[in-house]
Length: 149
Ligand code: FES
Ligand code: FES
Image 1 (cartoon, helix red, strand yellow):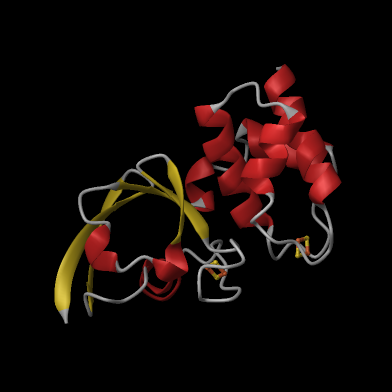
Image 2 (image 1 turned 60 degrees about the vertical axis):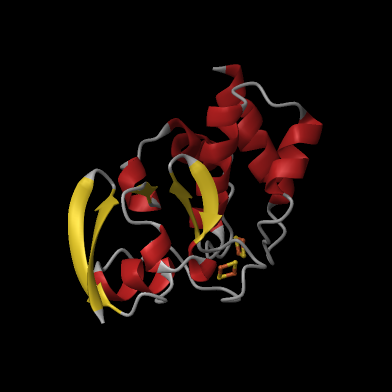
């Protein structure tokens, strides 16, 4: 076990965990930031997506020791009224909701890199965040809505 001080949603947070503990479990179990979801645990589904220095990363596959000194943003850090969150509500995107924080974080990363993505760029960026409810078309509409603002 070792102490790690992380920058999470603009706050310094210190945890004492093993160096190989995935960031996902630090967020959920140590910092009570349970908006980030556990899906597959092996980097395949994207439900655990957070931003690290602005890049979408799969927190289930990222050891805590690799994110020290980096800016970590979780869905809680968006505050609930981020334009992407409002667009997801306006387009009535969620069904069961389980994948949605990962979808929102991936969409935030896409729109900060490409504020006016094409349909093809949206499909390419979002295709690996899996939604078993099949909300993909509504997600694409929500991202296009933000891009039009
Ligand atoms: S839980 Fe991390 S990619 Fe599936
Ligand atoms: S809304 Fe149910 S898994 Fe995506």
